[in-house]
Image 1: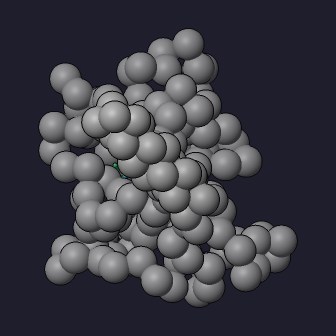
Image 2: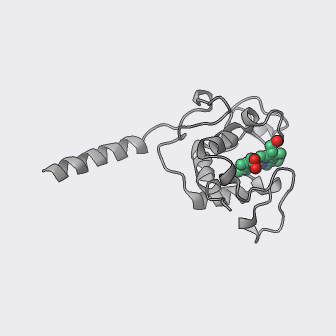
Image 3: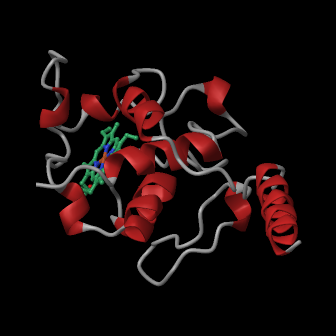
Length: 151
Ligand code: HEC
């Protein structure tokens, strides 16, 4: 009997997270330094997808600006931004989520794009107007990957 109740409770908890709406860009709560404590979706980030997004030129395109030794097989690594080797030793998960959502809150005047913001872009393709570069789930997937980058 007890087991049935626990199983039921788990099923309810699972279904409510699976159907939770992602947080819209305008509803995100930033901390004092631009960090974002709460996950944007109810679905845990997937590091393997995040790794692909990191090198996808149409998505994260992170490699265009950052060296990442975990992707030594990729020929081109940009050097506009800092190396991301060991970046998860320098920032915690909430800070890294904040950097991914809107790096401008963290680094004033940075050229790093704000990946989950739906207005106010500079120099960005018209087709992205009114939408975000990455979806909420893509941000969570990227975060799941980036927090594995420890020395
Ligand atoms: C157009 C270049 C550009 C792109 C694309 C870019 N970044 Fe950045 N990023 C920067 C720069 C420059 C900084 C340094 C912050 C500053 O401007 O002072 C930075 C900083 C960071 C930091 C903090 C690093 C540290 O050591 O303190 C992280 C984490 C980061 N970027 C992750 C990413 C990820 C993940 C992506 C892809 C989703 C990405 N960046 C895409 C330019 C870029």
